[in-house]
Length: 329
Ligand SMILES: [Zn+2]
Image (cartoon, rainbow, N blue to C red; front, side):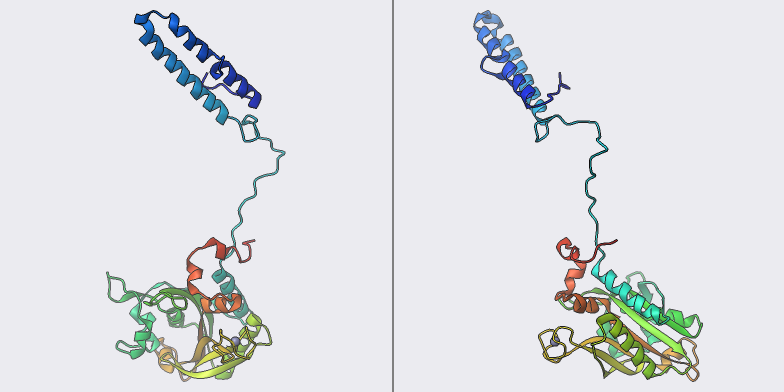
């Protein structure tokens, strides 16, 4: 009885009338109770109650075995029906921007180099001309690994550049994309982790003009050929001379708006000629070889490209945000 099925709503209703209706089996047996001998009434009443509950449960089971359309669930699979649509993910905006940056530098002969996110002090700081007690270290406070005070989460992918230079294979032309860490208060414009792409070119006779032309090509490919660039002198311990590069504001075209703080320019990366001390730290002859390096935050490029105003959106995994980007295939 438990496996009984109702083929449709009519059969279900017929069952209800037969057993649970006002003239149904349950009611009619109740009517017979008056004929039961007084000493048997209790036992008969219990039996009748059990039968009533059993019938009601059976009715509920039959009712739930019908679909919303009032037809029975079928165990047969109709292979001619169209399939359920499969939800299709979208690529993360950081991945989209990173692969665009990588493909632009591929055109110029740069290959991708990667390295560990847990670094030692030498590769992250000291080899980059940031010795212990150097004040510039304060700007790159990070997270240290408790098992070994020499280990830390890398603050930039420059550590990968050191590892590649130490291999001693020249000329060297690499870009290093990857996640980096800083001990920063999380806000709309800063996070304790973000993604970088850094580039390095070392050969004989590499000049600042090569650096400018390389970055100019990148900006035109990334943002279009109407975008202008400018360099401002800056300071980094690992490059000399050093500069920060701005592009003309994509929103106002250089007229001045809130995004560019009315200046018409937006900073996108830092760059410079590799400091001779860094080359020597990696056993490269700084009299023979020169090189340039640059680095940019991928989130910053993505915020400019997609007009995203809050950095935190990139790591909150909110599907309403992520679904707005192109599909995975
Ligand atoms: Zn602007």
